[in-house]
Image 1 (spheres, rainbow, N blue to C red):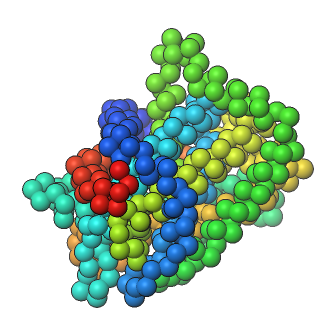
Image 2 (cartoon, rainbow, N blue to C red):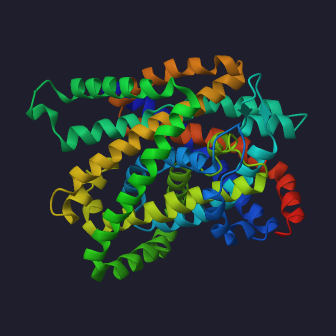
Length: 449
């Protein structure tokens, strides 16, 4: 089995290299273009986004803006920010955080445009529910070649939204922290399978209930967990306040390390930061517009401002806290630690020797809520490729993948997600750039630019 995993990992590594450069050009280049044509006004209206988040629209169709953002954050805040950051630092060192921040700010503008389009260009099914997301703003906004792009996006989405990373990292965290073999020694492989089955059962109860069931659970759990994680992180940073300035100095010095640049590793560092930031906030990938397009918002740019809050909260806020804790702890210097194991060790070191137990409770909630929300993305992608009514059958593939993902290596899981996300980002960014004039037109009408 190990030999097969090595072969799969090598194939993925060969594919991801050229895709990374295309993704780099489209997300960073496209994001800068969108920032210029919008005159960076969306970034100046963050406070308006928070006001809109709590404002309710009277509509019997769709979900509230708060529910839409909570569902999106359930998919991004958590293992993407906690485990994803540790993977980034393990691969690229402390300096990678700077490039995650840069990508997040650019990504916020991208999300503003994509979530605006998700509301401005959407359909309804026969029951009056919204059909939204990249595949719909592609087909409705780009008459000649929108459908091929939408099919491309949806096929890649079927793989990209599989619960590979979440199931894998959750299972690994239980094995490392709880050590179930101390209770019943049946081997880690068997325990991973058992834990995967448990996750499958828990997830099934929620995802087969549809959109309303998912947003009801996530809008209740996610805000509480984000606040608790924030408080825990701030407590640790305040307790180590004396080294926080030097940690920031290290982060920036490593981000612009001229020795790294000369040795040819600089762009590799930038790429790692972009890849992990994209995975963390999903900016440019096109998943968030699927939820935001279900919002009761009437104006596309209203939803765009709310959607833009995602990268601000999950990458700028949560990733920074996680990254600082990992670097201050010194755990990242242990070369054999990666993924969620690295984050757990950092929290253990800095919070009285049992911070890993508190963290595992939080990531359990984050991880399980992520399993709930990602299934909906797959349902919508499959529903577009077939019919909206048949989309729900994707859930059977999804729950089976939870078990399979639990036993794969973290390297294979990361590679699969990176490939799929890059393949989703390419058609989505092409569509956003092409359709950006629709959003800027509404911005001019509202005297924003």
